[in-house]
Length: 106
Image 1 (tube, helix red, strand yellow):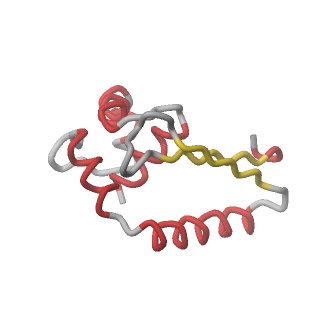
Image 2 (spheres, rainbow, N blue to C red; image 1 turned 120 degrees about the horizontal axis):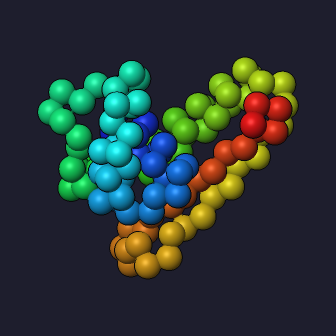
Image 3 (tube, rainbow, N blue to C red; image 1 turned 180 degrees about the vertical axis):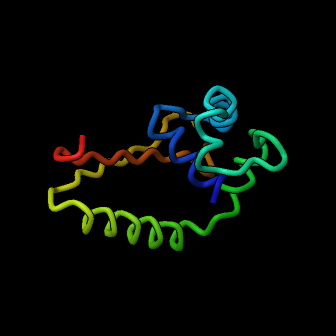
């Protein structure tokens, strides 16, 4: 959970690399510790890459869709979702970026 959530937070903040995810968590570790456990310290960029290389894309899509659906139930407003593929991130498994915006909740 910590790896997925912190990498999604990093991507939402414009981070587009695994080393950037590690840097993001290091920079925001104190704030993130309120919500996530880091029993072995900040995850390395290799750890983030192994996680995302081994996740089943279809299963993640379904789970993320259910998560977005639950957010829509919380708010009665429309949520805009935008996805992009990060250029030059990889030829085999490129990074994808998803942004969500709910006008009512900013």
